[in-house]
Image (cartoon, rainbow, N blue to C red; front, side):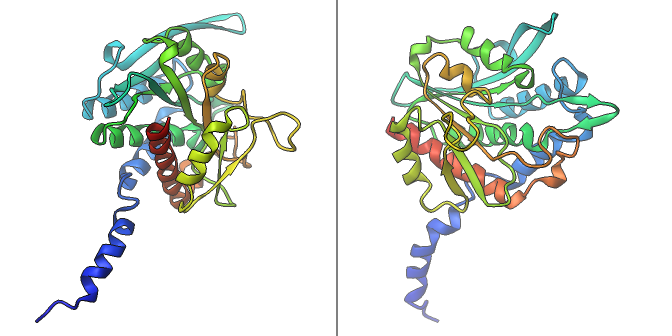
Length: 298
């Protein structure tokens, strides 16, 4: 029986669509966010046993990928003062992938800490920010197989909820010259939105990045919006709302991917069951496409 001539043509046309979305391992992504936001981790408050379990999990994922790091066992320990209390041995978990064509660096960040337990209620922080942390690991897996142009640092940051302390520690004790850092991509709350919208904040400050992002998002399943990055613009200014602020304050361009606040923001109801798996997967796929475009065009 002869193969119809239309079949090879259809396969040629549909093949890019068939492989799209397979770049990110959906099952692994959802497994990661589910574990990181589980009751077992007790809300991942810095220095808690739950935080240590999160650290162990992230480090294992980096080790399984055989990633390198400038820090022993992927861990950058740091201290800070919080309301008169000296916090010692908070920990950023950091991996490195060398670039093929450039010594410049893009730093990809997501904070893994959350609020812990309050009044016997566990603040699991599924969207804030197990979502960004799981996406960080998914992107590390992709770029481990697809070498980037620029070197990439993947930083799972601690103590964001206590004043962006992990990000401040990283930029103040960076393993390379900060002059080599050309961009920070930060992910914080990316797993749910009723309007199917994800924001890229930062292009008001760094307008050269917007055309790259617009082109990379043209065929995305999630709508990429721009804004939340300038005061008196009619919406909240997110310029200093998350870890990217520490980079911006050093004059390093940033793009912050996130959704607008929802009813479970900083509530004990921010659980895995509240995320939108389809939106989340598509949002991570979009962020990866934008990251690839930025890596190739900067």
